[in-house]
Length: 182
Image 1 (spheres, helix red, strand yellow):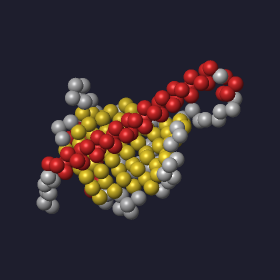
Image 2 (cartoon, helix red, strand yellow):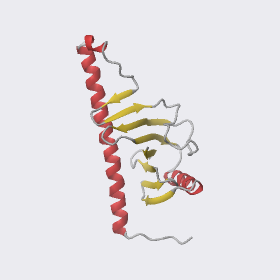
Image 3 (tube, helix red, strand yellow):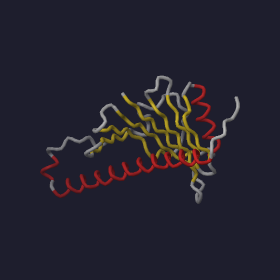
Image 4 (cartoon, helix red, strand yellow):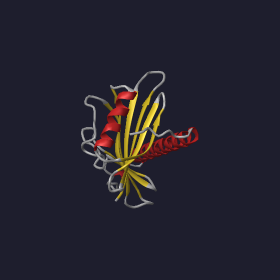
């Protein structure tokens, strides 16, 4: 199969889209954390309200979305069960985010610190996508950031795989995010 060269401007646009997506996820997490902190502060100040709240401790609520923290021993339901995962890694994020504004749209994320190199992770996930008939619609290969965006065969799920390396610590992080329209 012949390698297709992408114009540099298209590579940069794709990289900016991925960076924008990661920024959006970070904003969602920051808002979620802020909301969770405010709820716990309100509970401490007004204990009588605590009796009326039935919020699951693994779930956070915001006006526009719900975030459910999944136990790290489990894989969020929308992530393919056969996706390659490392054992004995630090899991940074493991959750399911549902949108109130877009019912049926769900984001499943598992993010972990890898013991493998940036290149090794990228090849593992690229091989997984090819072996399982996911259509790779975008890829980025930079010195400290590699990513793949793929669509499953029935076009109902997008899989965002981002592998990044911290330039100071050398720590490699893998972010697996599935966005599903159900």
